[in-house]
Image (cartoon, rainbow, N blue to C red):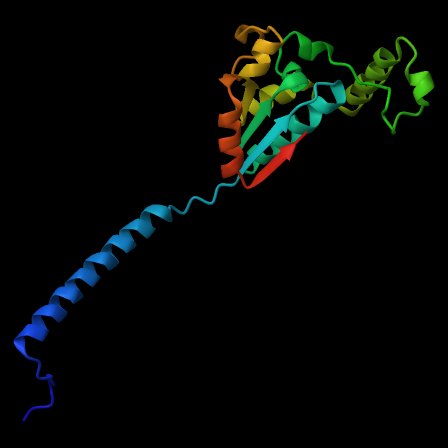
Amino acid sequence: MSTDNPTTAVDDADSDVDAAELQALRERVEELEESMAAVDTGDDQKKMTIVATQGSFDMAYPPLILASTAAAFGWEVVVFHTFWGLDILHEEKSKDLKLSAVGNPNMPVPNAVAALPGMDKMATKMMQKKIDDNGTATIEELIDLSLESGVDLQACQMTIELMDYDEDDFYDGVTTGVGAATALQHMAESDIQLLV
């Protein structure tokens, strides 16, 4: 009796069932492997969604700086502009954004003085001078950089209608006609979500 190929005595009925079960298991394993291969694409690209709701001069910078920096790291970035944040993408209005002196705890003047007529204009000019002296990019330059870097700058459709804007009012490359449902979908898929 040879010991090279040990066999177990199994009647023919059991052998047929075991072979069928084994084949079914093999097919299921192949299906799972194919399914896992489809899921594991090796795409480790991070996603970020920023919601920009404020359109003052000083609040135009954070979403654009964060977006362009994340895009430089190879992230997929969407900035959804809604309500006053929409003015950042409006070609005409973005050139005249103001810095609010009232209620800003870092302003070197008390609120009573900050509320005087012309203080917002003066605070904005002071900040623009600092930006120019420092060589910091302008809002328009940051918009261009963001778009060139592949950032999807989105304009909320409901706000466009609410503010009675026209889609042609925005910088070239801005995605218009985006609703809250689309923004929420991207947020749900993002690694990082920010409200600015």
